[in-house]
Image (cartoon, rainbow, N blue to C red):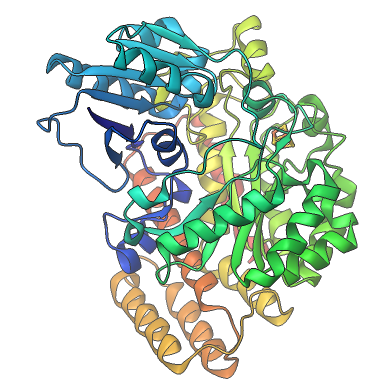
Length: 516
Ligand code: SF4
């Protein structure tokens, strides 16, 4: 039996698509991070199946290829594309199975595009489908009634992916979270945290390392909150130290109070923490049940503690909570500037299915007519309480451009280099020459669009050669984010703005020039 597992791509650009980094270093068809769902499905499939994995981020789909079954995994922002792929394969007589989070939320909608739907975790559905397919009696629906036992779950078939396409590999040690923030679906999807035995996770790391090295020596721990159980987290970090890898993960900001965790993160090779800072308004945090995890008064000190351990922060911010009026953009910009958060990543609050925020927006009749494509954190999908949708969209795009225009970008980078955060063991001369060539190319390509580039490049050049320990990879990541800001600026020039958002942008441009 020929089976294809497909992960659909989301066509629109996003700040984290790192298109510049991919195009410059990895090739246009490369991705940065391996998907986990497809190799997990492959591992749940009996060995007699001939399996093809198609990650649409890196591979085009050949609709003329012959498959007996095509199984498509679906998230809300990729649902529309998943349905297109499903319809296309079904029109050619292929049996299509749809599964994943969005299908679990909207089984009736998905059923219109599939021969079979699977709801809940794949461990509880896919093996049953395979058994029934074998007996020529596949059902139209499979439902997982309980979550998987992570102690006995399969090891993903990373060997079926093309490792050269990926810069990082993905590892999962746990599912779920002990918190239940209103805007987040993790608790609904996975429930309270479940953990894999640490020996099993280490074994998986060794397995994936063999599949991907020498290309990649770093991984991303995709767990939503490894630190739900501090004891487990500490044992995990201790076990990682001897493996001598570079890695990154998500973490709540309150781990900054735990000196032992910070020390272990540093010793285990963690060189980036993605932290859900969410909002600089305590009222907004409280309005979405995040006020007990995040305390605005402690933010600056917590960020400084993490920086003191040499770990840069990817700060995840959301804009448009019910406590946010149109001053939230300046306040957030100022906070990023003062704390020197290396990679601030902004999203518009999204009422994702499965969240309490979604339920509330429905109850209060505040959902806007949007396609599932727009539920990606870059579009306004609901009526904000204290500003118009236009104002929220304009403020969101402004803050990205403001934080990633060259002056504030260099200011942050310089501060982090100075404080020993963006540092590595001494970079080889060849690498610094390469970075210099990239900077020169940037200057030639973009100087006439953006004159601020010249001082940025001059200052970066002198840092690069005066301080050989400055981390070049971080610099390149930042250039990738700056490229996204330029893309947004170009898009804005071609768009009409409402009077209200035009006034906001006028005010914000004053704030930007004052702070520079
Ligand atoms: S936002 Fe983070 S802390 Fe809150 S429920 Fe989701 S994973 Fe847990």
